[in-house]
Length: 293
Ligand code: GUN
Image 1 (cartoon, rainbow, N blue to C red):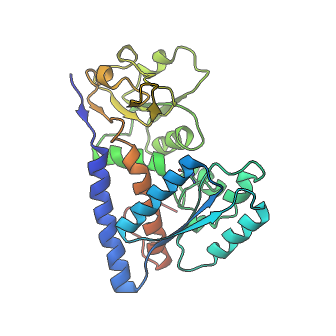
Image 2 (cartoon, protein in one colour):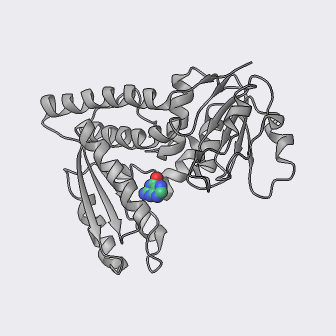
């Protein structure tokens, strides 16, 4: 068996085109342009690249974006005051504080200050907790992107064995909860899991977000598995690889996401989606693709 390869770029392009036309409709029919405020504290080079990419994607989709650049020594109180004013700003439907933050700032203070209905990153404790009951206002963007990819590829979830490798708060744990909500049988493996292969071998659907280059090799998966690789790792020779040995595992899988070009393009796409949904909700519109709140 050789796997069909998921084209994340094409799925993202398709979804972004749909979002752009919905943005246009909001502007022309309601005079409202969806808007996002991105707060960047300090000058972390990786964060600067991520923020630039998010802002470019907003521009391409017709979403208003504003960058709030604050110096690394900004007191926490000043950052919280900025969030308060954005919470009250009707032009802003989404607020994102880029992480990591400088060490003197307490991250939960910041994330919990963002109004839940503007928390397009899905990091507010209410949104995190809402995943348990399926009542989140906004799911976090990376696992949401994986869910959309599986949906787009018509992968059946209910009753299947899903193994999630990696138990981070941003990807692994929310991913597991979202798939449980769809009636999968879910197992989460992490750094201390003994004999990882014994678990991954049971997976009908394997989602890997471990941050370990090429951790998953063919002997660890069963024939016909669906593999979603969330990892992005730069090797010493400069190559970009995922957490899955792509060339090996694709020979056993039925469907596999590549790195790059798989999950990556979906993360920002879901940020655009959440911002659009927030603007639509502010007008009393409940689109069919909105998460249940
Ligand atoms: N830093 C790395 N990834 C993310 C993300 O998805 N959201 C935010 N706010 N910060 C990040």
